[in-house]
Image (cartoon, rainbow, N blue to C red):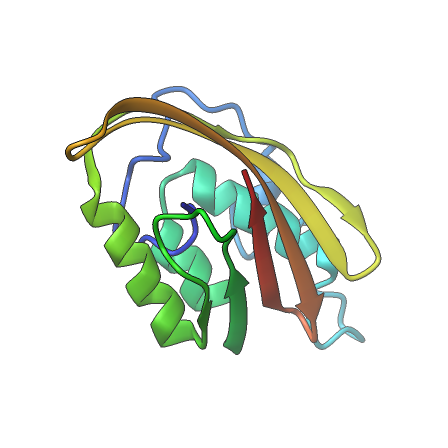
Length: 156
């Protein structure tokens, strides 16, 4: 299971989410690029990803922040398999989204950044087709190069 491969899904949206306003738009200080800087920093990418995920804009996050050659790693026991390339990661997300019958809640923590890596904790409370209601919790780890997410791995 992973939250970022699910285009057009609002199962991550919360009714009331308090987000630092500097994280919400491309023109905000959190993602505005320094005139000398070509790409977003790891912190800016992390803040933007979290902000978009909290708003339920998963496909926008993927389109905007993922490298075309993204590698997405899932644990062996995951219901979806690892994928390489933006198109394959989108498809993996669609597969996961199709398993959800009803979303009850969810959250995404503030990111923790170190060098070109960042992580965030994710929780999803949902009823899955044929499996009942489950609360899924995972740690999501990302690598950023040249202002794009090139690698993600999920631990649950």
